[in-house]
Image (cartoon, rainbow, N blue to C red; front, side, top):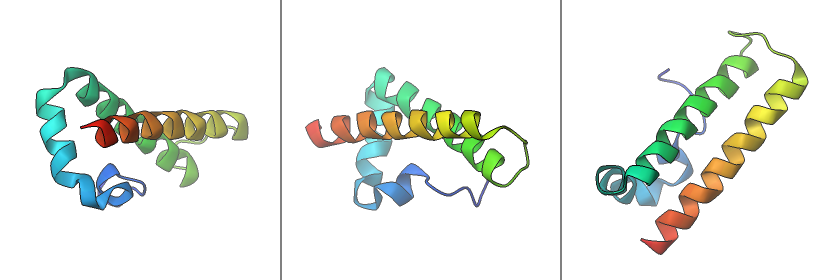
Length: 79
């Protein structure tokens, strides 16, 4: 989805090059980024009602996205 909000390059614009490099160098980081993108797309689909879901599931997806983003940020800071 081209217009999906909360993409990592929007969340961490100054870290775009580091994100790219870590995705290549660090398999764990690459998996986290992929999972983040999957969850983020699911949140966006729920928000736009492309894929209807109940409020509890949407909130669960948002929490998961936040946890993933926090873990990604910790790795970016340590790199």
